[in-house]
Length: 304
Ligand code: NAP
Image (cartoon, rainbow, N blue to C red; front, side, top):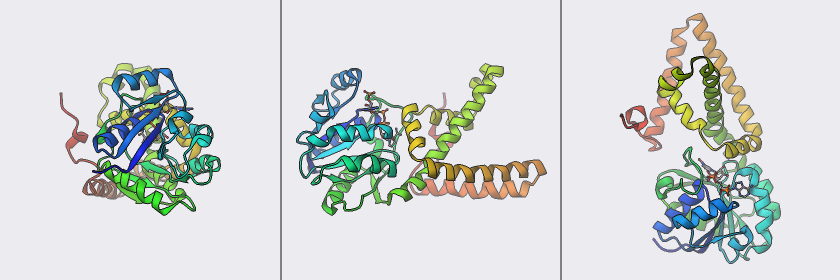
């Protein structure tokens, strides 16, 4: 694969940035990949594990001379970072972000970027419940969708170039409008996370009564909720605060469906429950057929 950018700057060195680093380097897609992290602890870890060609103490220093800048910080931190790097950005550079919410990030970042700098927001639909500089791996993006959410007036060549980078690290790409993105993600990611947090919270309350039972006998359903609910608290706080309307809309619909199922259980309407679960099973099949998950039993978990 040939080089797409000469110098890439990763701002924030957690799961997504470290995965990007390993993938871009593996595929030789950039000449140099530098980074910045806020805490000295993360910077030291990055240097220790060889994450980034150079690790800088400030975001402004890191973006100097970069032709691509990738903002990999929580959604709520995007604005302050954009403000800090703006004066140091090279003319003609592209700025992207990997935030899980798009409208709020665009509103927070775009006003700070100087003219002559291209802003092409993105979002990889790839992640794990782990965070920090040690959690990344080059394969994270393989066969996953990397959504590109161009803003009004985004330069077509800049959009094509970033699309080539995301495809270069193995992702499928698609372009989407920001509001549509936020609604789709509320359904596929944000509301499910909130439901997992809630279910684990309920079990935690119960756990005070039957402590070890909740842990020892955690069946597949609950275990999968706990994995999702172990995701980074800062990231997810910011997602909900910044995708408020779409998440509330989907949670409203969720509550209606829950009431309908609750009623079917109470009235013994087995037909309704069976039809419902048949429909949901088809969705799972669709996801597997689209190559977005494996059909190994119990999510491919290794049996001990
Ligand atoms: P992460 O592993 O928790 O890393 C976040 C990084 O941002 C860390 O380097 C952290 O610095 C830095 N940071 C946090 N607050 C900051 C602030 N106020 N100012 C400057 N830097 C700050 O997070 P991640 O999972 O890579 O997520 C990064 C972005 O990707 C988020 O916007 C998230 O919505 C998006 N995303 C995440 C996933 C996922 O599954 N995790 C998937 C797709 C998109 P320190 O280490 O110094 O604290």
